[in-house]
Image (cartoon, rainbow, N blue to C red; front, side, top):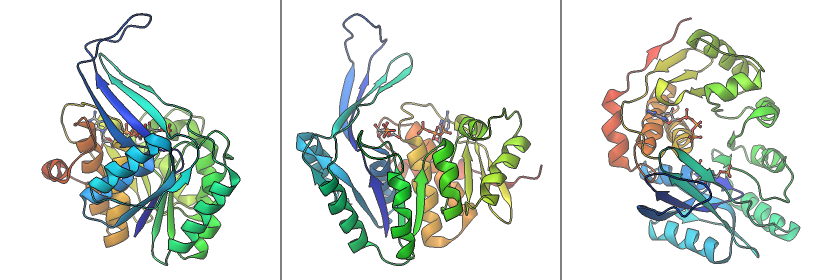
Amino acid sequence: MIYTITANPSIDYVVTADTLTLGTINRLNTSVSLPGGKGINVSRILDQLDLETTALGFVGGYTGAFIKSTLQADHLTTNFTEVAEDTRINIKINADQETEINGQGPKVTSAEVETFKTTLETVLKPGDVVVMSGSLPPNLPETFYKDLIPLIKAKNADFVIDTTGQALLDTLSAQPLVVKPNHHELAELFQTELHSLSEIAAYGRKLLDLGAKNVLISMAGDGALLITKAKTYYSKAPVGTVVNSVGAGDSMIAGFTGTMATTNDPQNSFKIGLACGSATAFTKDLATKAQIDALLPQIVITEFKA
Ligand SMILES: Nc1ncnc2c1ncn2[C@@H]1O[C@H](COP(=O)(O)OP(=O)(O)OP(=O)(O)O)[C@@H](O)[C@H]1O
Ligand SMILES: O=P(O)(O)OC[C@@]1(O)O[C@H](CO)[C@@H](O)[C@@H]1O
């Protein structure tokens, strides 16, 4: 089972407009409300891939109820911890550019945190994978996800934390199943500039040396690298029109983690991950299985030698 933890879910209110102008009334062309938050996105893609997943995290109020009921209507398994305050609403504006306005989220009490930890401890079994992603409610400590690692490891389960900066470096010694910085985040991690694929691959390998079991470096439309102990792989990104890139990174993590957890085949996991990421970038909502499958023939993985 792959559990996702979204500490701060959201309703994603995704809208389109011809243009967006500050300081005036903007009229929308379309709008849709989607259950959002990075871990929830991972679960939704895993579900499309017919992989077993359960979404955990904190939800509250009418917004939380919307998220739960929408996911359940899609037959996605959830085991959320209820909180007293309302889950946030994030606004995603697709106009001449993509603009995102993300809420702060509800405060979570220490009793609610304890209930969540008990749930996690109760459900986890050896061989499970826990994917933790997204921002934290405003009053939780920055180490919230990292502090769950001992509990996860004590259950002989694997983990993935989608984070950046020092928080990412801090988790490496605990051997995450995969880390997925994009190439800009990788450069920032090492306070450097990366100009070529060889440089990106070399710095990505440092994350492996520091403990990550696999390293994915996404480069949006420029393709991606997978660095494993044995080899480094590269693939171009599938070609298409970007409609809404929200959730593309989450989709890539879902495709890679889900395939890796069930097949232990890094090359195929890379291929599925890339297809999931791009299929989501090419559609308004997250990708469907049909959209993911349609991109697979475009993806050619080659061994990358510097
Ligand atoms: N222009 C694009 N063309 C094709 N695929 C894309 C494009 N942009 C994003 N993707 C897909 O989404 C994946 C993740 O994108 P990116 O490298 O931007 O990561 P990210 O910064 O984590 O994404 P985000 O934060 O937007 O979710 C890429 O590896 C690719 O599969
Ligand atoms: O504010 P956070 O938690 O960093 O990001 C939340 C969010 O932008 O991430 C997802 C896309 O990755 C969206 O579904 C959601 O609105």
